[in-house]
Amino acid sequence: MFHVFSALIAFYVIWRLVCPLPWSKVGRGLSAVVVLLISQHHLINRNFFGTMASPEIPFLVLAVLGWAFGSLIFVAALFLIKDLVALLLFPFQRTISRALLTTPGLRYGTAALGMIAAAIGVAEAVRIPSVKTVEIEVRGLPQAFDGFRLVQLTDLHASRLLEAPWMQAVVDKTNALNPDMIVITGDLIDGTVQARAADILPLRSLRADHGVYAIPGNHEYYADYVSWMDAFERLGLPMLRNAHVRIARDDADIVLAGITDRVADTFSQASPDVLAALEGVADTDSVILLSHRPPGAALNAALGVDLQLSGHTHGGQIWGGHLLTKWANEGYVSGLYEVNGMQLYVSHGAGLWNGFPLRLGQRSEITEIILRPVIAKP
Image 1 (cartoon, rainbow, N blue to C red):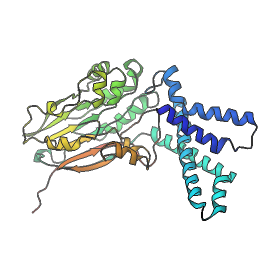
Image 2: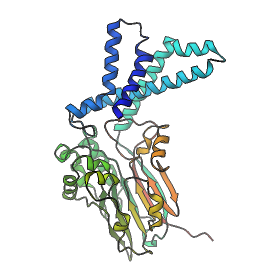
Image 3: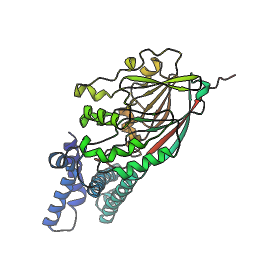
Image 4: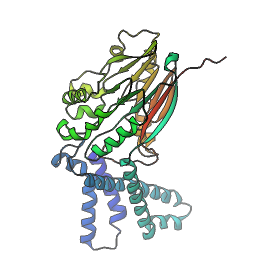
């Protein structure tokens, strides 16, 4: 369905942009073929260059394909907006309406704007993420953990687009924060263990006094889940799969729990189970839950979770498009939410899937979280 939808977008761009060009039939025909091929590059990659999740082609090719596909999407969106405005104006301002539909300069300018926006989006997507610092008040947090600093990394998506040097830069930036603990909330990789061995190697250099913990995201299941769980353990990344650990500080402790991803059922793996992850945890314990996806937050709050850390949404990647992502994730897409007394933080993530490597208005992040106990109001 994805490929059919992208083909329909291509035909719309061909109709509105390519067909009116003052070129020969051969020139317009070849341009139409190029636009259609761009719309189907995911299908081509899947069949000839690896998988749809992880085509094994050079960085520059992936970046150019990302720009070309992004240009197609942006140009189609801008033309659609322009055409809808023209149709709405037609009963009242026919001259303006016709100009919007037929003026060559406006048509070329719209196309150029879409291509420039796509270029900016790719540059934003592959940059080293900035540090975003947030303070979060957590109910039941022991006083000993006031000021406890943890760094959340999520959606690293190691691939031929985000390779070892990028990953090393993220690791260096994280370690420079000197955090008390580091957590990784899924989607660490795209590709097989063999293909990504060098790209994930920098993760073994992550350092924090109270440890580094991770959970799987949906993309781990797309690329040989069992092998990846073993690989992460060898890297020194304990995977919390429906399990928890206790983090001690001075004379107090908190619970750090993690669950698997709901796509696990498709691959005959353990489904996410918060009850199993919290087995043996007392009602009085302060609980932080790592859940790759934000949906289910209300149920997690009812089960005694005090802070949920999630990713998966990438913040929607593009402002405006984030509204669709929000709809698909129970209203959670970016930043801090209060859910029935529980705090939920949804990170934009550090990386993204190489099949749509664009960000506009929703920047990547390394999240530094400073924990605070809830201050009782007089």
